Image: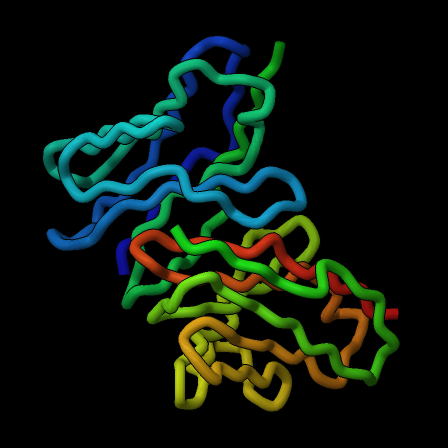
Length: 108
Length: 111
């Protein structure tokens, strides 16, 4: 099982880029990295996932290092509504196991 | 991605009773899961709901307490049995179709 490590909390100013790091040093070659977020009292929301190439969608960008041992989720222009808990997950046997995630607070 | 409808959205139940939570997916999916989120905590996987066979439970969760059904590829139920106040949590259904999608959860309060 590839375990992930994330900072407990981060702050970001509204309108600035939020860069959320994740370490997954034991990831194997065919395991994807998934990012989800949970806004208070809601179900987790899918953000993005990737294998080894950088990925971008309408919500965020995912930068994965060449050795795949870490990744960074980038919210290019954070808004107050991006305040949430962000989870970096490497599925094991097809299952998502949630850690404590990173509490991102976007402030005015 | 799949859309999940989960109900009830919330309930208040008496201790000793049971509650069945329903999860409906708008497309056929191979894998469905049930999670629990205790107050102030992250999500904990309860079990994988297998179509046509018994669910696969994670360590610390047993079938007698959390019986699960999955009669087809779009529907599953989770029952929380013989409830106590410690079962007060949010219960979430998830399905995998490419990415993993989550329902909005059932907020259960046991009094």
